[in-house]
Image (tube, rainbow, N blue to C red):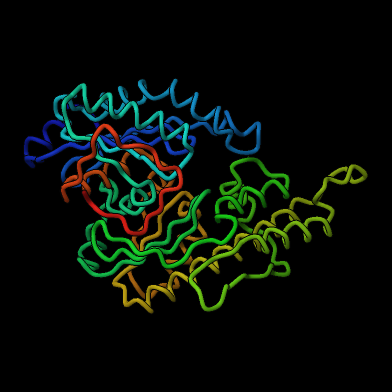
Length: 368
């Protein structure tokens, strides 16, 4: 969307505020801009996938140094693409946790400097809360209002699934979250990465497993860890079962005596791994939502980009399901701006002593 169109729409609709959001919790440097209606004016992401893929995972020191290099140009580009001026910004939202300490510090310090330079309030945002409010984002192609109008102010069940988090959280009111269940070991995204490594697939593992699993043959399913009596998850057993099956099939470790492994074998194992993860995530989330008398379910986080998970949840849930567009599932500045908008409207303002909290949790979130 061009600069003129943004300005014209803002003039016509009389948008009362503009929020800029900064996200640097892990390996994406991102800045997003939203208006008072939650409409995305820009969302720029500088990914570090190529940087970390050679190591098979995130290297914290490398990530923080790359954030330093990317932060300013990403922010300037976001302003340029949004079609606004620095003087149009009413508040700066920034992730202060959870995440990698070095990465978080880079974004928070830049946000403090920006907030001071343009004389607007600083609003700290819980990264997980940012993911949740990513489902409230509006774009030219996506209008979540039908879902929002249906759920209104009623209870909403949130499934947050990413490389570092797998949690079922009850959104009782804006700014009031109750953690019901979480993983006791690996997060779903982490399990995807580890399974992909066993299968000889590239990092990140989620997209690769989804790719090879499409059209895969049916083989013996892998186990599910239901953690009966709780809303918790566990994927360590599934990871071990995948490893053992890969060994029995000669996939892992690579057998030098075999020139080439049948790709259908890898595809079949990738599919049953994905099926197991999706089945547990969907079943437990729907059960929790019905038990708590929720009006709807929100699916967010990087793993929410998985097509099988999205389609299965929509198919099996008797309740309306809200899912952000693919580009707003992974870490992005627009979701932080959106959450910053909600926090700002509820009176949250942070001072210069705001510090990063790498292990910040979503429960008991309050506006202050």
